[in-house]
Amino acid sequence: MQNLYFIRRNGKCGYVNRQGDIVVDPVYTDATGFADGLGCVQDGLDLHILNVNGKVEATIENASIFGRSFSEGYLCVDRNDKRGFVDEHGNVVIDFRFQIAFDVLQGMAIVQENDDLYGLFSTMGEWIFAPEYNYITGYLPNSKLTAVVVDDYRWLLRPLDGSKPLQREFASTHKEREGLVPVCLKQEGKWGWVDHLGKDVVAQQFDGTGDAFFDGTIAVVTDNRWGVSDRRGNLLVQQKYNFTGDLQFGRRRYYDGAAKPGTLVGGKYGFLDADGEIVIPARYDGALDFVGDAAMVTVGQRRDAKLGWIDGNGEFFWQPSR
Image (cartoon, rainbow, N blue to C red; front, side, top):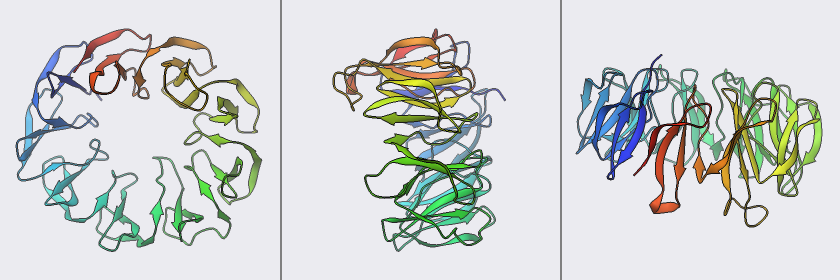
């Protein structure tokens, strides 16, 4: 599905198309990312839902942006410091009742209600997990499990169908994908990964890992040097970078040239391909993962940073601006 791309110019937000043509003039104070053919902009106290032609599909009065973008036809918005969800027509489908709410995935959203505890709430208005956890780590479109946190230091894996958590406890986890979950067994300990039943697949041997497995690979770090491992713990990309990210749409972020090991200061971001070869040299001060054949990058530091968009070869189709 065709999407538009968020831009900022003269401190205001708008959207361009893949050819770099402005479709929505940058005149708004805030805007979401574009997804599922829809975006949302902040216009004073109101929100406008836009289609790929820049046409206003619906207006939501007295509300502000909270979610990153539409997901599965739902957008998380804020009204009077409470979060709820609207559909693509601007209809409120889940009332404004939550302190915190994350984007909808698999027909559910992680939410925090009134007592600082987190649960999993469905778009049908039912609890999948009652709000009883200190935190829920998140999950991905193809995940079968998520991690729930009890008493701050006890992490359990729980199936997203609402059945009981697995019995094994961890000190920390990342996200389940492709049947594998990166885990750490004790505080300040090493990381490995387990299967969907909580059984060891690769023993704890790394100082850390990426967020999840993508195409059978995951980023891993030892002694502040990042590389990429396969499902069996074999290195596919040697640990030589200051950072490596998840493989998204055939591209993986990397950071090189940091002034000090263990930091992301003084270097630049670039992109590797699925085989670990450099396809876009490290030359950006900031970079997000590819979405389709485009990635948002920044040039400049902090308040002086300018935002641009590149294609899969690193060529700008929107020159950096702020």
